[in-house]
Image (cartoon, rainbow, N blue to C red; front, side, top):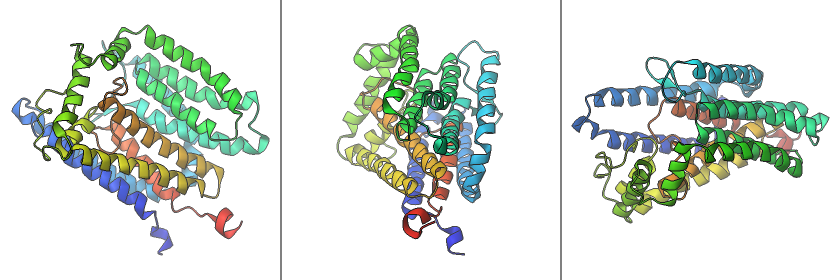
Length: 365
């Protein structure tokens, strides 16, 4: 009975603390909405609903066997590709990223992150005995991430498209493939992505804002106000709830720039604490995953760990002005619908992996 409810306590505490931090600072960010928005109560109610649903999803995902994810990996890949095509067909004058579910807008590109990991974990597990160090296997492994990335690029969502390729490279590079062949094949989508960004006026505006935060444009204004939030916070911060950047000075502070709010209200100490949580998650997640018995579980766990920590790193780098604005949320902390729910599914899977046997290392087969 004890074994049935076992999971890694440290991993669970990290997820729990991050979610609690998210509740505190999202509420802090949204607390000022009532001053200028009639929809403030609706937004707060949605946050309560999504957070409650997230806790339920973690529990339900933990109860599912790891074999379930291997069984649905390929069907889920097909479904994700169909959803990415569907979102392109929805009539809209702007970007095509969301499917309206009524209570929230679902973003297929968020599901695509987890789907890419599931596909690669299944593919590597099934093909490793045949030998993965050849061009055909490597091309097949890259095919699905390339296709998913391309569909996301059309939306357009260049940051998410690049993120899919990056996660695929990290997983494939950590597996049994030839590094030289990986670099040769990966150069193709990277060149395409760079060319697309270079010829995108919107993307270049964001890059220019990163290079010149005092430029006066809308994007440079965000970067400047984010840096100002950290400067105002200093070492210990202004106090939770006392920040002023959320008073319309820093747009999207509850999503894309919530780390800046943490910096303003809790200072360097608070920022260091949050960064430490993600660093601890990185080492703990990889340690747990690599000590599991089968290849699928190892790749799945490492991939999920990469996904969470790399996204956190990009969000933090954007907030401190070391990376162009990309629209990435801070995992488990930022206000979000589909992104938060996919992160909760990932947390449940990682907790389940921590329960999986490690017979091949400590007990023998």
